[in-house]
Amino acid sequence: MDTHHQFEKENVRNAFIFCLYTGMRFCDVKDLRYSNIDYANKLLRFEQDKTKGHSARSWVTIPLNDGLIHLVGRPKEGETKESLVFNLPSYESCYKSVKRWVKRAGIDKHISWHCARHSFAVNILNNGANIKTVASLLGHNDLKHTEKYTRAVDKLKEGAINSLPALNL
Image 1 (cartoon, rainbow, N blue to C red):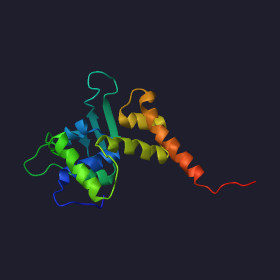
Image 2 (cartoon, helix red, strand yellow; image 1 turned 45 degrees about the horizontal axis):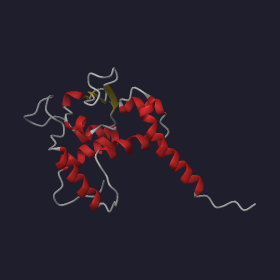
Image 3 (cartoon, rainbow, N blue to C red; image 1 turned 135 degrees about the vertical axis):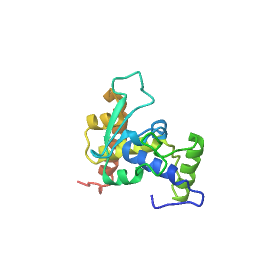
Image 4 (cartoon, one colour; image 1 turned 180 degrees about the vertical axis):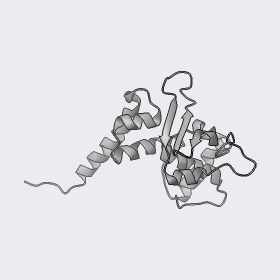
């Protein structure tokens, strides 16, 4: 996150970081409005675009910490509660910004916007969150959708055990 590049778009960078810490999809963060944020209770509430009208769990509530509240800020002069928080360009333009950021950071992997959602899920699982909590934060109505993230955690566990010195008994 300390990496910057010459033509960086701060709103794109901030939106990607916000997704890393909330698990939001691009389509949802693009439409995020200040009215979705309950500043008094530090909560984000929004209806997921992907599941809108198809699932009883299309509404998601995510607690926000002080850092996330600071990242989104409050409406600026001339904006209202219905103004967009990040005011993002097209997905393609945002993806190019992320690619430049990733390259500048020296990361030699394909990083898409969806990787932020995946990283969020794997990181909170690694930090002890249970699968039901992760499913709720991601807006999944079935644990089968969330279980794919546990495979990455299992691989990390396997790697940790295999990193120990060999037992020669």
